[in-house]
Image (cartoon, rainbow, N blue to C red; front, top):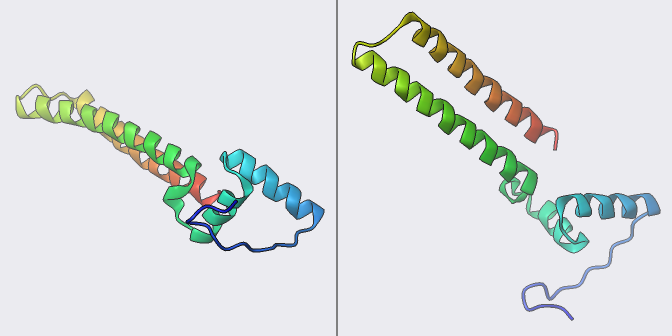
Length: 110
């Protein structure tokens, strides 16, 4: 029985290999085959569960690094700034750049 949203039925011919690949990829994505095909048709990266997870992890890391940067800035403003703080700040910025690049690379490989 078709639901009210998906009322048009399409027939699709696949080879055995293609059918197996579709089944495997849909299972990996945690979707049924029809939902997986709809996802591929819409081509919305934010719909992909893997991308949402990667972006959530990146946001959490950015927030943590941002918190550390705020603490260093507060120390600087209260004249408690040390040379080590500058080195930490540089390290945090490198970490942010690395995480952003790594996330972009992982998303582009999907």
